[in-house]
Image 1 (cartoon, helix red, strand yellow):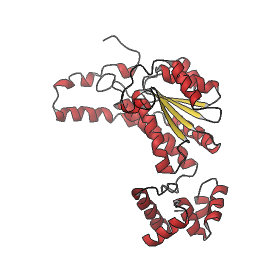
Image 2 (tube, one colour; image 1 turned 180 degrees about the vertical axis):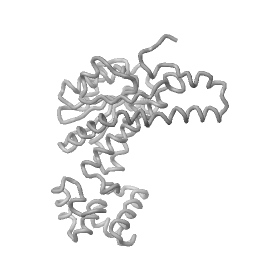
Image 3 (spheres, helix red, strand yellow; image 1 turned 90 degrees about the vertical axis):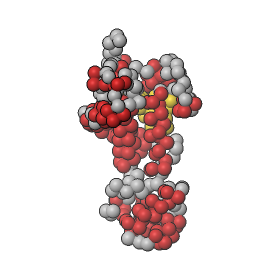
Image 4 (tube, one colour; image 1 turned 30 degrees about the vertical axis):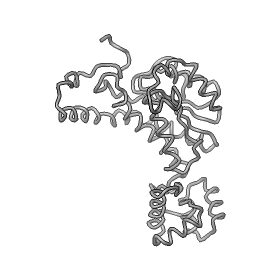
Amino acid sequence: MALDPRITEHRNPRTARIDLATPDEIVALMNAEDRTVADAVATQSDAIARAITIVEGVLRGGGRLFYVGAGTSGRLGILDASECPPTFGTDPEMVQGIIAGGPPAVFRSQEGAEDLPENGAAAIDERGIGDRDCLVGIAASGTTPFVRGALARAAQLGARTMVVACTPLEGEITRLVDVVIVAITGPEVVTGSTRLKAGTATKMILNMLTTGAMIRIGKTWGNLMVDLQATNLKLKDRSERILMESCAISRDDARTLLEAAGGSVKVAIVMYRTSVEREEAIRRISEAGGLIRRVAGDP
């Protein structure tokens, strides 16, 4: 096989005979490779922290965070975006994912959809991305034309831009973005299958970006998920348990308090801790920049 400059396309000598391995040996080989991923991500700690700071500023300014990618990268962006509303009580518009090939590509590969940079640029225009927003391009190999086109257009429109990749980057793409995050995960267990180590690293990085930014804008109280909305039985149970623990009250009292707070755990905590009504609790939270520790004290 001709040598490709993209490390994600190199053959892995440690798994060259994996087709002869037993199931136990396959598991051991894959586990050994996966153990290297966290260390690869750790090398990018400073860049990820800078990215969190940028995303925090964008969200505080009323802007939106977008992910853009193709294939696995696009699906991971959509996954992370879709989990923000139930986890942090965000508006679905706040964090969004864009995938080459559109919604059908989430469920079935749309081969060739990633090959045209102009399609990436068009996707940016369709979402009305502008100078209040942030775009994170996800491309394990760093070469996806759709992602490059999207980043170029977003930068042209004044948006903050970042790229997440798993192979060294150089040239135009590094000049398009404010932050470069490159976790070099090395050759995959199956050559070029970036849904493996590269995908795992990408998921870890996206977890940090949104979780870090959401913590910074006040979506947690300590490590408690206090900005969730009790929209299903699981979240209702979690909401009640958070109130029971943080306010030292019974489940029945937690239910009553949650109802009075309009289903908002954060508002309920401030109401209970400061003995105010719902509207006043909302006002105090707003004045505190969403950080309820400033209003309700330590959890």
